[in-house]
Length: 133
Image 1 (spheres, rainbow, N blue to C red):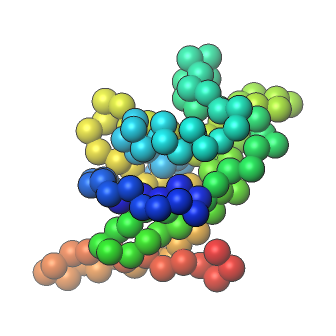
Image 2 (image 1 turned 90 degrees about the vertical axis):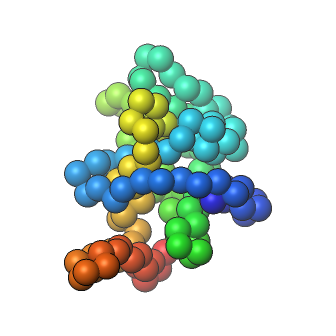
């Protein structure tokens, strides 16, 4: 499931991979739409190829529940970059996974975490918040 800001958890199955070679957090379109519905001035922009918003926007945190544990991404990490140099419009760090078929937990998600890879006979991955998150 997932949680936006201080809201209640929305039950949903989100299958994905952790990928340090991907900058953004790619999620199902309904999840992304629900997130940006909470961001004043946001829009899905054909010009920029994804969700954008005023750079001054106060972005809510986003949390995914993975293995029964809530993993929070601070809103400040979701403000990825200005849409173009000198712009007051910013590109969101959460975007849709249209056409991919699964979610990708990229750097937007991973940079607030310690990540442990266990490569035993039962491979798994674990996450822990970094201090101050």
